[in-house]
Image (tube, rainbow, N blue to C red; front, side):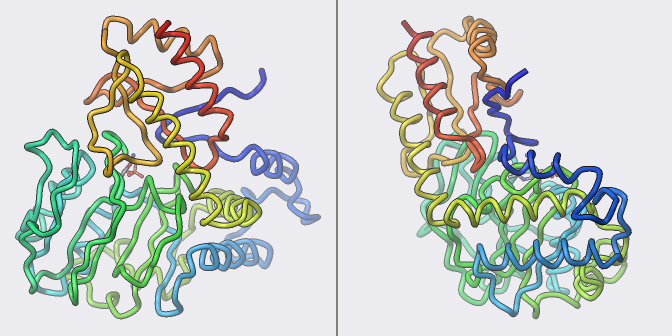
Length: 357
Ligand code: PMP
């Protein structure tokens, strides 16, 4: 079977060139006579793979030297606990912004550890916009402020970075990291599950400013302590070696595409044309306010929901897969991460026109 256009929210499409290289190297990585999957994480070969991946990621994002990059397991969901365990610094309170389902999950988890101040919430607007920053009720003494720059389920994305002064800014960038250039120095900590723009599931990237680690709460499990992983170069235990290698291939591919400015231009073009197709039609709609619309996850509903299943079935017949919206929202969702070629978005738009007709 030839490759389809896969609009999955994650695990998501990977660049075909990356898959081809992984296939070619699968049983014998560069003359070592073994697969990366079979290598000791402490071997010379894997160390070189790991170091190159980190160097390429640092290059792509221009990560300053005073930030550690960690390659962990546990998914972004583990970070919902790991962040407070390491960053509360004995203060017992933190600020959180609620812009959707993933914010809510982070907030529910942190309530086990701290007094949470929800500084702003879009819940009353059914998570279709981002509360005006002027109205956020931030606590200048909070241990940190946490937000979700891109809400994967409802497709709500910040086009700006909150200014929190001395309060470290923490961001769950699972579905937006590497989609555009980023000023890492504005953040105390960034985390992301890999399975969208980075690589296969099983790897979680954490980028954290040096001075914030090493002050974990009493009782923090060793595996949940950033300082332990930082000191061990993310090899305190066995890291997700194959996902790390695959992420490295994705970083190389991104560099070949011209880096994050070039990929951002393409992402914006892809998203713009899809939103335009939705907005120009009476049959499709997207409720998110225009300046908060995600470049990565584009949900839309049909005017006649009884046609949803027919839409999905016919889309698959046209080679367009995994367009079903999240179970909490319904309708459709097209995730158009970095590796979704522009032709995939064009094919989706053509299909939408035909279906509507
Ligand atoms: N945060 C966001 C924004 C996500 O999109 C997801 C996964 N879809 C998660 C957190 C949870 O990630 P994981 O499955 O890696 O724990």
